[in-house]
Every structure is written in structure tokens, then in C-alpha cells.
Length: 64
Image (cartoon, rainbow, N blue to C red; front, top):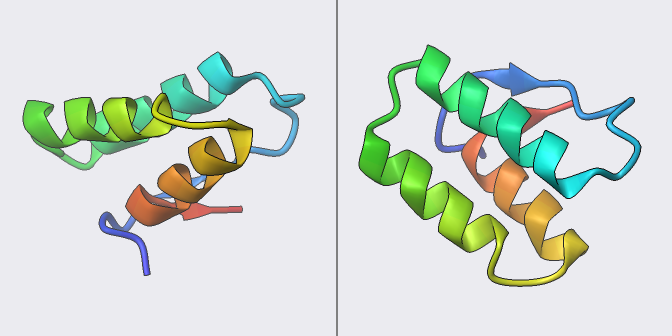
């Protein structure tokens, strides 16, 4: 279950990690996530490989 109740569509991003992080960050801002939560999301996203990036996105938002 995602931490925030907001959906992010990642299809069409063609595997671009920066585009995915930007989409999730935008969604987090939209639902009022704190700057601390957004920074934590970004740190977690960048702390591993591409699979980690996707797992982290799913941890914070609903991904479709």
C-alpha cells in the first residue's frame, strides 16, 4: 500500500529515471507531502538501481 493516495502513470516514460522521479515528486507536492518526505523519496529512489527506483515509487504513490 502506498504512503500517499495519489496515482502516477509511469507508462510512456520510456525508462527515464529522472522523468519518473519528477512525476512522483509532482504528485507528492500535489497531495501536500512535506518537503522532508519528498527529499526522503528522492534519496531512496537514487540509492539503488532502476528496480529500486520503481519499488520506491510504488512505496510512496499508486503506480499505474
